[in-house]
Each structure stands twice: as structure tokens, then as C-alpha cells.
Image (cartoon, rainbow, N blue to C red; front, side, top):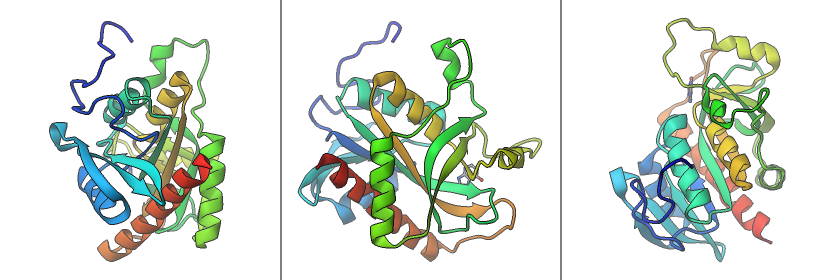
Length: 244
Ligand code: HPA
């Protein structure tokens, strides 16, 4: 934790302890967080707005749930999830985002539940471990999400993703991950899983596939919106199921 203060509010979050629910959904985009709060939650209240990263707390199916954006990339997800777990007593963080598929059987609009998150980042170096850490999802959250996806009837895959520090690569070699069975690329899950592991908390990344790096399949704005809503429903049902 170094020399940083561990009290709330923090430099990145104007909320105080108790303002966030035990479960927080994290899209990358602050506008999506606002949309989730307004569309899916009841009695939602704005609890943070530092840097336009709106944090909202409300109810879904009678269960308190919060939603706040992570921003893009592992440093941003790293800061927000660290503070939620360690300073705001949050137990569960569910990332809801998009990913690019590497795999022929994982199509655009499919849902990927990230069982593990490989990475090209050196985020794990801070733990000074005598080997390679394998960032993994919380089994509790993952099993609830798989059940929710089945209940809803959506096509989903459970497997490895890779969290990359780069969207634009000077040399495009990200497909090399596919030879190890990695399904898709995104940019935040590994930091989330490592922060959860270090704090003894729970994390899951749920992604909808927005683009395909092998076949070039793409989605329209409307299709992206529909698959996004399905993913939110899986995440919210997971939040409720794990609380029972
Ligand atoms: N790279 C990284 N993150 C992503 C991508 C991608 O191609 N597509 C959606 N999120």
C-alpha cells in the first residue's frame, strides 16, 4: 500500500465508506454506467463523479447494487477496483465490457465469461512472486453467471482471455495467444482479478464479443446495444444469485 492514505474519500472517488453496495458492476465507459443505473436499477443515487466517472448505487430485484466505470486499461481499472475493494468494503466486482475474439467458434455478440486472464502487462511484478501468477475469476461469481446465461438462453463461452496494455500494436502478434486456447482480447480483467486476489475478494469479467480478429465479423451499433443489455442482465442476476 506504500505511503498512500487508505481513507475515504480518495483522490479518485468522492464517495465515503458505505456509499457503495457490496457488489459493483464495472463497464469501461462512464456513459454506460449511467445508462445501467438509469435503465436497470431502482432508486439509484450518484455517489461519485470525480473525473466524470459516475458511481451509482441502487437496487436490482431488491438487492443493493452499484455501478461505476473502470475507464480503459489496467492502470485505470487497477486504481478504481483497488479502492473499491480496500477502502469501500466492496466484496464483488463484475466487469461488463467488450472483447475482440480470436476463436472461430466465438462469434460477435457471444458472451465470454473470463475464467482466467492472461496479460502482456507487468502488473503482477508488484507482488514480487517467485513465478508467474495466474489471475482467475471467482468461482462463486462465475458459476452464478453461467447459470444466469443458461436461464436467459444466451450463447456463452467460459475460458481464458488476454488483458492487453495495447489496443494498437506496432507488430500485430496478439493472435499468438490463440494457439494457447485464449478466446478473446480485452484490456482490464487481469488487473481486476489480481486486485481481487490480493484483497481476498471476488471478481468476474463478462464480455460480449464486439469484433472478430480472425474473421473480421463486426457488429452494428444496434446489435452491440442488444448484446450489451443481455450481458448486463447476466451480471445483475449474478449479483442477486450470489447474495442468496
Ligand atoms: N483489443 C483490445 N480490447 C478490445 C478489442 C481489441 O481488439 N475489442 C474489444 N475490446
